[in-house]
Image (cartoon, rainbow, N blue to C red; front, side):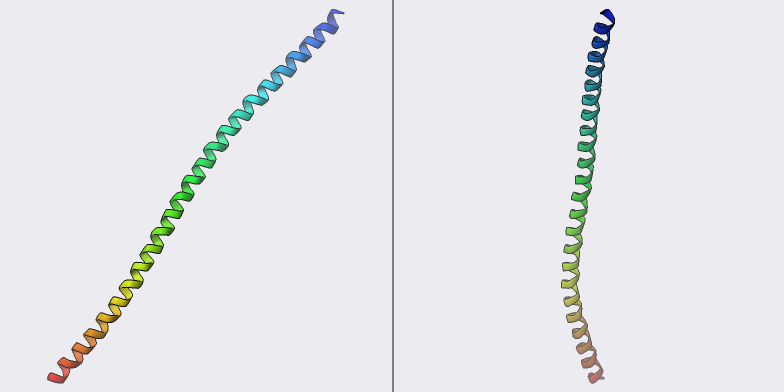
Length: 86
């Protein structure tokens, strides 16, 4: 009779320890996943910011390209006028 009660008591204690271990492990996993997700989100924000900067630089280069073409044609015309005056 005592061995049956002792066995049942040990089984209940084992179940309680198992459940508590599972809950503690689950909480650690959730915390790790949240930390990992935060790092990934931070890196993605940086990448998106860099992509926006690159697009802005490309627009600036396109604007400068037009200005440089205008300057080149002006210099060419000026050179032709100087050559004609000689």
